[in-house]
Length: 392
Image: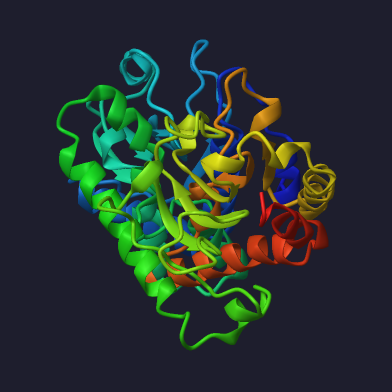
């Protein structure tokens, strides 16, 4: 009996220690392989070539949630009329469990006349345990492109892969973003990874800065009495562990005093700010941070305007309902960094998911930055607070 796509997605039984995204992608992939036989055959022919294995019979059934003596691979391709199978294990960002593929091989040796094990993951770094073939989800994305398949749901599946960061590699790699903190913790063979990561972000920031002269929208979000200020980073490109754009940093030339400024960009290292990222697995956070100078650190938070600002911004961020988090650092730390109390943030990976090119990421950065700056710039209590702090 044929099963509809949404019925197939609904019936997947979540299992402990499983990523729901893996489940969702697996059911969607198996469904289009069963539904669209031309694409299913195209995929098998590609596997046949890569495995150097004669399949011959393309009459098959793609099953999920199959119980192999207590082991549950993501997908199994059974060839009708033959005791032959391809066992698939799918991963998004998690690694394989210990002996996971060996357990499948042990079962297959006892129960199939012929078999192959295929692993599909987010990155090549996850290719381990010696499968017969290891692919990335970006290979599946490319295969769909190569197939010229015009079926709407096949193209939708391709778009899904792109939207969750499993499509073509982006300039600031989605996988590189995820492994940023892991790389720091390992403290070996990481210099190139971290350097490239920071370099790509800096290049992105420079492209966004270039809009300053041409795009009036940026200037409209900052009141006319204040200039859009992008200060020199005082000898460090990632000063205070962050890379981005600073607004309203100084009201007067050569002044080191600002009654409240705005940073928007990426917080790579939260040590100075005394913060942890929202999700270390997803890497650094994209954020807007409202900051105050050291000289005002014991004054601003006693102002009614500041309390009003916290109250209103927290409401606005909650209403966005788009993964943004309002983080009040003063309420979350015994010894907070009082100069950087207000953060509006989201994992950078979530901001950039689905981007492919430098231009894509520039536009996504600009859209996110504009959204957050507008939230603050339209809040009267922010400007009232700055005014009240000017003469302290």
